[in-house]
Amino acid sequence: MIKPLRKAVLPVAGLGTRFLPATKAMPKEMLPVVDKPLIQYAVDEARAAGIEQFCMVTGRGKTALIDHFDIAFELEATLAERGKRDALELLREEAMPPGSISTVRQQVPLGLGHAIWCARAFIGDDPFAILLPDDLVLSQTPCTQQLADVYHETGGNVVAVSEVPPEQTHRYGILNIGEVQGNRVEVRGLVEKPAPADAPSNLSIIGRYILLPEVVTFLAQMERGAGNEVQLTDAMAKMIGHAPFHGLKFEGRRFDCGDKIGFLEAQIAFALARPDLNAAVREFLKHYP
Ligand code: UTP
Image (cartoon, rainbow, N blue to C red; front, side, top):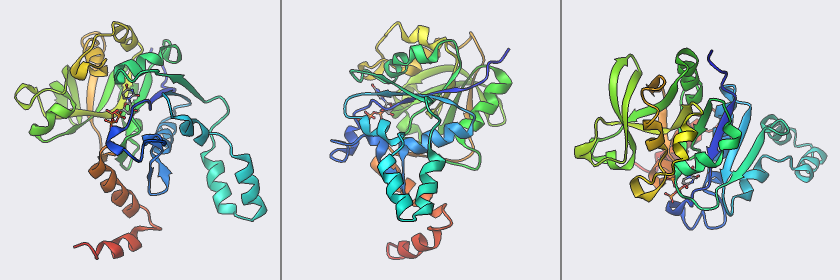
């Protein structure tokens, strides 16, 4: 029986060094794209795919992320008093059901794999999605929903993949692929950050996953991989052969918002996708031919 997908883990304990000094006193995941913080995009995307329970893996200096999902009583009262109905409505639409967000602490950022292992009690025996909030996907169907559709069919592991220029494979987890069925590829192997000459393909994993709970057993071995970090990719590789494992060439565009250029491009793309902003953005872009 294929278990329903109801849980998501949001790892947010990274240091965000590429965005210093912006991230000195503010979590990277609170950086806004247009008018919404990255973390909110991730939560909205997951909820649209039927996810009901969230676990944020946090670290020092990340309390703003937790506060973001609280009800701001004083703010709401002031907005109501001043008749700012639209703003109030917006806040209420985004409110989370009580008890739907929990947090665990990753005291030392030892890598993405370690961050997921920190959420092991939350994961329990259930399949779960992982969304890295610094990866944004602009698509017709939310990326997590696209992965969930594959999961509900196969009952196995599914990762979102996109093609990267061959010279950039050393920055990503790369797939060794088997059978290809349309936009779905069978995963035969996974390598974290291979040099271009050693890369088995140019298909890289982006920050969206649906995994079976067994991955926690492999993470518990705490083997250090690339960059001396506990790599999620290495633990996922150990699940190949035990359950179906697919990569999905998702529909949509992915923006790496952990990187300055990706973040800037996301601002433009997301603003252009908004009917209320499109014309004004096109107008000002004329000044930068
Ligand atoms: P990154 O590789 O982007 O690292 O992490 P980072 O620390 O956030 O940013 P830079 O490279 O220093 O600029 C990818 C995702 O994994 C989480 C991060 O919060 C981010 O969502 N992460 C990474 C953890 O939660 N714990 C870790 O130990 C490492």
